[in-house]
Image (cartoon, rainbow, N blue to C red):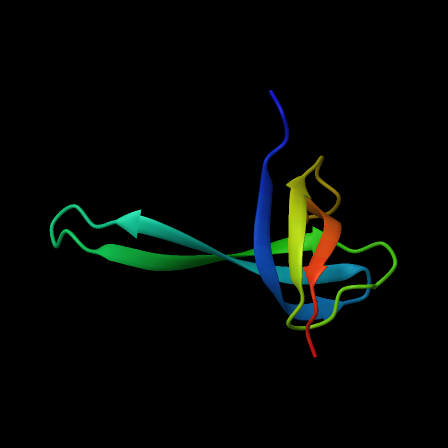
Length: 80
């Protein structure tokens, strides 16, 4: 089975870590509307290249710490 890949926006950065917010659209069963939900993922950023507002692609990886299970693969768009 291949690794999952997601695209999201960097909302915060720390040393070698970026918090990436990923939007998902779900269909509400009762109200029959589309609902936007957001999930935050802690992703490993080896060279501290990601900036707040960047659009990045992240890939699932082995556990790197207590919270990090994702790694930044590439930066797709610019931020600030």
